[in-house]
Image (cartoon, rainbow, N blue to C red; front, side, top):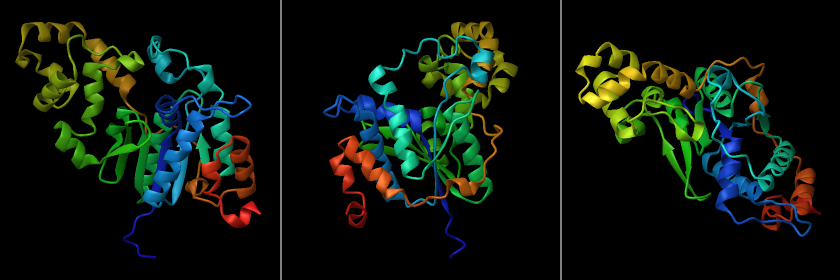
Length: 295
């Protein structure tokens, strides 16, 4: 094998992908009334991505029910989230059953989010000389980009993906991936109920980071901040800025008892997969199963 060709390790944000699929597709169901649109859309994206990127290692990370260390830090974290529709809730066990039949590794962990699993696995992949590809609909993952880590962000339903590496992020936003953590501290995130500093949006936050680099440096040089109202808000909400940065940072060193070999791409259990696809009436996906397995 050519040593210059890096092995590819893909990590998929399972919750993000099934949510994206669920809301992008009509509410499909089987003749028995089992809802399947989230699962079907997820699998459609998975097949497309696997074909396009020719990966060697693969893991799907999921959020686990229950509070995380972020809730312990800030009890209002994600407090504004609406509950997941029941039509989607019932599809999570189905996608996990199908991924098991595909022999694709799945991970979730008490106290942490899928982001933190992906962050830690991406670091392990980098340290082992791999090319890492993260798949998500969550822009928070941009902070993980590097020369060896690419982020594929789902756009427009389930048909488009936008690819980011370190250079593209600097070119598009004018800040480094690491500075996205600082940006979260300043602007917060409504979807996760991360407060940030009132009056500081993405545009202003990026402008401040271009000037000062980090939140620490910004506050060390607070007198240089232009705009009386902006400066007053920054001073008043200093603690909130640091708290928001802590909440927005993806962990890259969570304790996991894993081996890279756990994620090696393996041959699916074709019989089990065919059985599941038939039960869910995924006739178009049955074509993905080799003919010899369908006899």
